[in-house]
Image 1 (tube, rainbow, N blue to C red):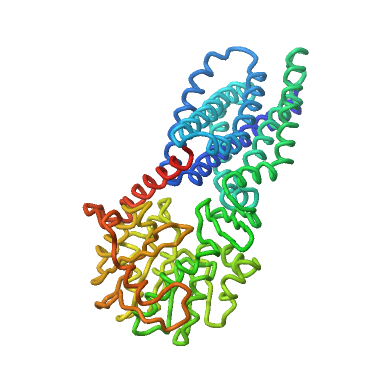
Image 2: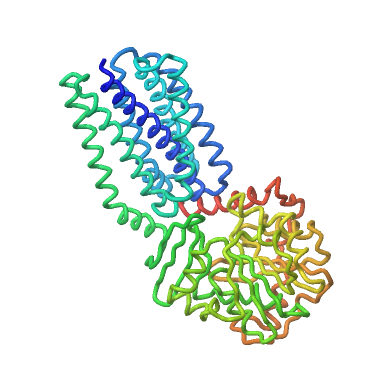
Length: 517
């Protein structure tokens, strides 16, 4: 073999190793992330994906020993098949979640992970054997495994910083499927002289058809996503964006504007005032001092709108993880009208930061702290309802301050609600008061107030204009009927043992099953 040809072949194989490692891990990240969006419990989904993927790689590596001849042909076939399966993984998961039960979806997702892992496990030994003409075994193993792992590192950097925010899971899946199949075509073209005429024809036609299929899928991806989203959301989608943190969707039906985060409704314009008056104005009334207020979450500006009604309020800091929520609140005409341009008010300061990290780093003391955070559907959110989090909140509260948090549905997720209540009590707050309000879009919704000193929480006299609250309504809010009262014997949600996530997902998955039947 002349040196020029040998160098070219080495370059092709080295490139193939890097790209194969990159694509394979991207598929793993896409499958686990998509399943986390659909089912929550990201630790469980990532753990299952990693475990099945690694085991399947072992199976693929084991079966590679039965491939004796035509290694180049087998490598090209493996790349094309891996690109087809991996590239279609996210579209398949969208379809499966829409059509299957949760249990069937989970089995299908694990089966898909197994196939991707097995094909990945098959390609690495084949590459090592193909490279034996160029390097001794010791160097060969080091080169192949080293480049494969570097490709995996590149995937972990590309995925959160570029792919997820700019392409989303669906288009990223198609894009890397196209790259994987393109790799197979590139290797085929380079080594075409080493293949028989029949094999050439079969491989070329198959590979080109797969590439055309993915290009077509990419072209229609917007319409496919629109179709799947329309099948989930009842009303017309007027805004949809995948951010690095979550998927934001805004729908509109005549005068009803709704915001969804990861498919969970955050508010409906028809009745959001019930929720936001309950979370803002009841604590505001109880607070002796009302000058300095901190909102954790609430980036859409609706809580701030209610608080700005009171003249004693001098400053409101809003801490929301996702800057896109602030941008939506400022730039979307429907939401800006709904929040009455609250984020442009001189008393309001918006900061894109993690609530827990902000509290840990801040030295400020607040008269009122309100937590309007998403439901605890994953580990990162469940920690924001832990005793550790509530203790940090307590340390940032003024001596006579008031803390209040949304606490999920008292009817649909009762164990979650009362777990949050018990966790606030266990964090050192001397006085904890649960209350609830009926919000038609959500159902019966729960809140928890905590104060260093005792207050008469159910006594309310409106100091600002209210559409929902009055003395009698607030009085009833602190009464719990027998079927939603505290069941007792609930575990405390701690940062190292997020039992709240288990309570929430059990109830949430039950609701999904009920909706599908």
